Image 1 (cartoon, helix red, strand yellow):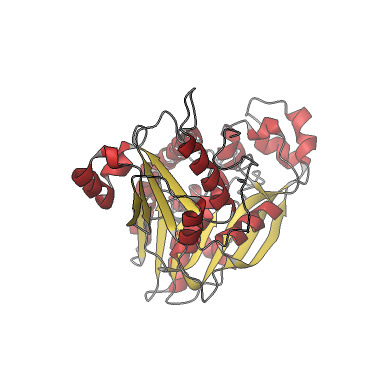
Image 2 (tube, rainbow, N blue to C red):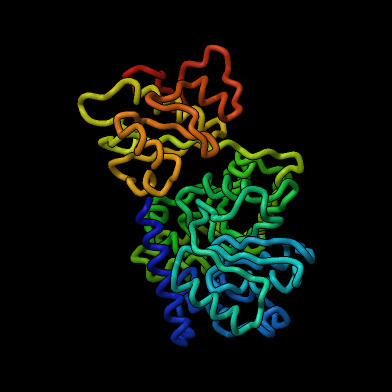
Length: 395
């Protein structure tokens, strides 16, 4: 799904450049002008009191579907993180609410958006703000460092929402709050919509079903999960935000009537929550991401792939890096780089747990994965999440 990320970066970067150049018709969700009163997703999200004092370009670059800062109940002195901060409107509003004793971070992966946001910060004269470059799947902040996470119609754009929610849980302090606006769906999304990559940027095809969103939050460790609809879209709304996407709107619109909605999603990291272990596996050069490919498959890789799927199904955070496909992941990790300098590539695979070497020279078994991740395996467990037998050829 890397192409999804590329499409998002391209379209949002183009929006930032157009806004910076003074174009008031830069495209937002659904192809309507940003903050145009006819756009069913982006219109009327901020009242005049909130917009007062904000740079015009921060308002024009607002690509959201809600107003999380108005609902998050931010308190003076808190630290806030906005996932996918765009032109910075929600970061600047949050900075006002938390006051000089607090801080608001904005995280975005698009250089043009970051430049626009920093320019807006300068024009607004707000000092307790910092914009960070990075991806919401890999938040560049330490564990337990944030009081509140907000986001505005961004998580639905990620192809790895489990990873996003796990990272959000990691950086929140115990007792911290998850308070985001997002597009969610009731029922199934038509395949014609989900397959159209442009609609990920239009805040539609990437939307999760509301029950699945809650399930993923719970899997990440969150409690007190609530999904509160703020806008439910009609057939005519669908006609607006599906127009120009190269599909037959008249055929598709009835299938989405009332299924898509903007919602405010609340959850909390339990006060006694501990860090979830991160298991990183650095593979030797493999023919594909798992090595389970080609005519002559190593059965150790088949078994490990099945056990990894089982561990992930049970809430473990497992990452794999293939030397042939992701060499920079090896070069950028000081522990891995040092290991390779001492032992060479023939000593791979290497397994790190929370950044420390746990195993080298072979793949872990299911019991080891379970121990590291804190999973209690069921007695007699022999099958993976997809029904494949661990260690057999059925995968």
